[in-house]
Image 1 (cartoon, rainbow, N blue to C red):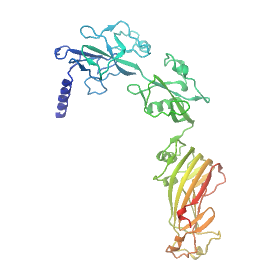
Image 2: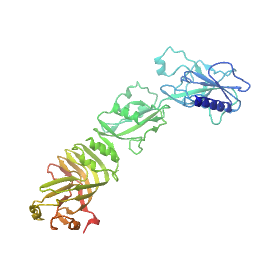
Image 3: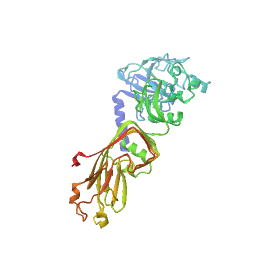
Image 4: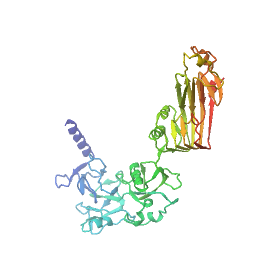
Length: 474
């Protein structure tokens, strides 16, 4: 309670300092010698906290208080459902400081909306309530009050000016061509016009409080309503796709055309790690909007997801900094283990125009107490106690299509190395404390799109380049 009293006292001090006496549509109690000038704020069809008019008495030569959208304001900016607030015009007053009324509306030459104290006087409003009795303020819409510079030296009337809410059109290609919207935008058209029918030419209201900003929710809801079966890639202000729209965006024109770059089907549009990760995890189709860096990210999670069956459209972008550590802690007799540097198992998946930059750290352990049979196995291609296969793109691929998929990878294998058919003995192997003779090696195969080759995949363009890290080379 003390805080409320304190706020009221401070507010009163501020009001008095401004030379203002607040009036709430009641007569009397005003010292006109101290506060000689009356300001009448006319909602002009809007709502001033439930009133059509509110007023203040002020001292001579002060600036008028500008109403703002704040419930605690001395005078709150009026609101009018379906219209945007444009400012305050200077109205005419009679000898007693009251607004002068006209018998007919004051039409705006620029095609705006004309309001009155009781409601809209547009054709649409007239159709809704043809019997409405209106009173019209006499004001000059070209003579707007400037709250920064104009001073109150007499009784004044400030009339709220309202304009049409901005609208936007989502333009789509129809049969490969942009719909001609020139005639739609020009002239005086109504939402009932038959040209608004069809997804390629529908108007949507901008729902910002003043009708100047398009929010992401506005346009997403509108798009889903008008063009089912397609996914938005990005929005642009031009049909050449050179001026992207970033939301919320401010628009000045009464009707704004937004051109939609889209793709048929259901895709996740991604340009960063978490979006790509979630899309693969949920087995969704993916459209890369830009390059993705996975530096410092957990790449190992991709190998653990369920089989991926979707489509990845890389659009000539790169997923870089894919760094993964693979550990084979022990090799048992007869094991054949498969690993992946990136994705897990692919079945019927399609990947196009994608470049991958991969770095693999493979750490392999061996059975510390092998049998004599294990020791006898050597480098002559006969069966070994364990063989590890590492695929650069995926662990396995069945019935997949790859077009222009390029993989550039570096690897480093501790204890035993094999790359592209050439076997290598790691010098560190000799220092491992084990009963296995130093002539024994562990086989690891690194290379290719997948760990185990399958003949039913279609691969066109692209390539796989796998190299041993220079710092690990002999």
